[in-house]
Image (cartoon, one colour):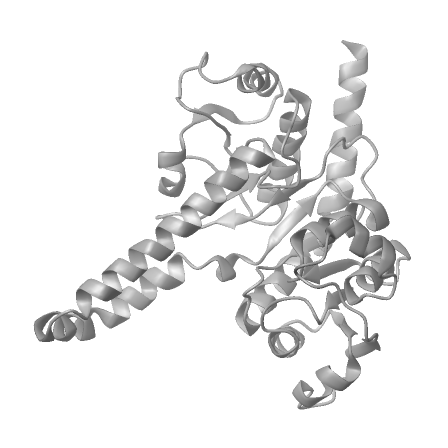
Length: 335
């Protein structure tokens, strides 16, 4: 399989992108990688030639400050746009970028295209949990507004990913809400609850934000506005907790000694809570896999995003979603 990567996207591009690519090529013998970007800037990091690594040159890129829709329309030769077109033209099986999130979603939607029957694609990262299993949340920002039917489609797509890629036989679906009771929440939540309950999915009911990291379910569905708030709250809390721990454990000589003894345990906790271990955020509902890596991704995070894209292609997730959505549409027509 061939994976196209925006080599110019992200805070540490292209160094981190090249490092991740080399690591993935070493680990997986069944992939080819196309790095799309400025060959002159990429070249210093190409420390070894590789028959399965190719560079497609372009000197144009989309900046983090660019307005997404305008940038995708006007910068036809931007690395991200060329990357998306490689997938559209069936020259690559999936694409990955750590660049401008809005531009990547725009490129995914207007260049790669939606699966027939999908009304709104969803951006879905995997979050860590205390038990180490993690959970996927849809949507965290692709669509601020959503209808109940959209949340049902998110649940279908999330369930397929959890089963086919993460190996969970019967993924538990939870609806993010302000309480666990069936009648809780706004009109969107109440209507979505009914659809999910009647869907045939393994729907466990409403879940509260405070229980998410306990591993209460495998797939969480919500609208993009609420999901993005939850995402930022979880990220901010984790960063603040580590900062407070560091400050406390370096405040006195005694605490520094204790910190030295506990350093391996702290490293293990940090690794367990590290987003990069789970890959990137998938943009589900498109005709091919589109992965959004975190903007601050290092080589290890890029490697995991590549691993994730490979697994999605390998397990035919896109085709399975297509078939499930078509089946769901037929059922709705028959009712």
